[in-house]
Length: 292
Image 1 (cartoon, one colour):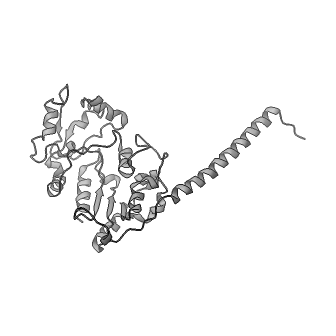
Image 2 (cartoon, helix red, strand yellow):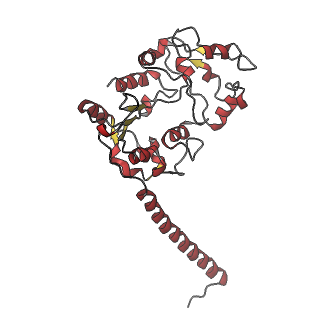
Image 3 (tube, rainbow, N blue to C red):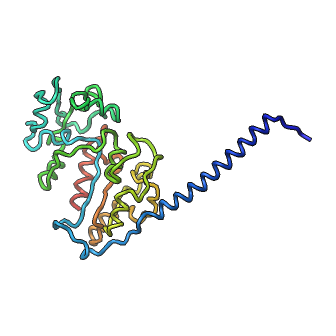
């Protein structure tokens, strides 16, 4: 008969106890997860006749593009080669204690070096409100701006519809937390990492729209990996999987009049305009969807 030492038996007992605890936590977690998912409202959109709006607007389409500020694309709009008031003030040292070396992107160039990104570089840009830390935070490459020589399609959209020049990022960091603020009005992450942590789907705008009978759709490139999509952060999003559709579905639904009340158009990585990629791809992609 094999005899085991007291130390071995103690270690084995602790291992078994920990295994039972972990198993219990897993079972409890699965139960809690099901409670979370079941708490998300069912989607039963009301017919258009029952939805009253304060304006004639019946559809809201949100088209995502990435990593460009308003000044970067519209800094000298609409005059071209004549900086707007905000950019003039910045270049003339009205907001800062040191000169800012702004430069137009040369004609014939459609991309710039990717600025340093993240919570720390962006807070260095901000510099406690001094707004003079770009060369140390995002880097000197962030001080270039496009003109109509590169951004004419976007300027055309601004002239036809309007331009929100005083739009600011909700969170001074990378893409993921800012996207999550749009979807859930908060973010459990401060940079582009995760999940985990997750956001319960019933705390999202998707569930809120369902709660009030407003139809919605989330349109993606079917070739894009799921890990690229922001919806990966929402635990229980599979409950709304019929709402996750393709670009082709978006065009088809516009044609047959079945487009939902709220739609998100999500670009592929190559169409998102994010530097160091060319802005031409996003400029071709966005107007095609907006004029559909």
